[in-house]
Image 1 (tube, rainbow, N blue to C red):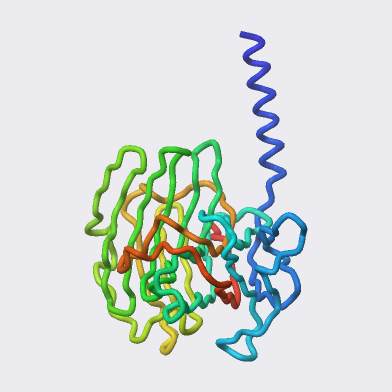
Image 2: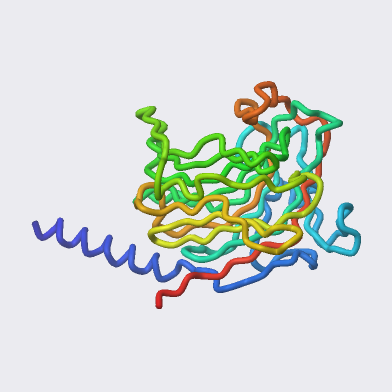
Length: 294
């Protein structure tokens, strides 16, 4: 019994020291106007030079705007995190996240490309497991936005999600699923607000920059974007009424661009082709404001 107590005491001390060493970001705004980032690290390829990234370059879409540009490499293998990705240097937690992004325009070049732009948080702890909140665009159809979270232990993940065609004002689905059990359940009522979303005229995430964001609280997550003409906040999903699917542990703040060979966009089952070119993603800025308990 004495030995068990001693081991537990040592583990408690180790965990306590480890927790104190973990650093969390304070409020920041990164505009990528310098040759490197104070807040994010890119997943550079082995030799330390990586042409997939170009910091402090001028936008082709919006002359005069300095951005960071990602180029997907056709030689990169399929899979999340296998393409260019920025990861926050420190942890983030509850708060408001926002970014101004323009996804690549591939419609005339390779309409069946299998490629994903992900704007999200992600960190896997042993307990309670995954902390992920995301926006994703399968660039074969730039009118569609995927939003949601992943939680749960490794090998038994749970997803809450919503898929929206914003140009047409269609919500394809809103619900919950488990990867291990296969359970699927649509959300209704308070967990599915707003129940309808008006079409955003001419929305196309590959034609111009849009500002996207989410507010993450212990009991609620609200995904939103800024209307490009009126500057009003357009709420895409205000999820509350249950703790299911709301991450509670800290995370890392990320934005990536990668090839998928098994996840086609909602409107095109053929969109899993390997990228044939170095398509370019433009990121104007990313911001984070921690939530403070009143």
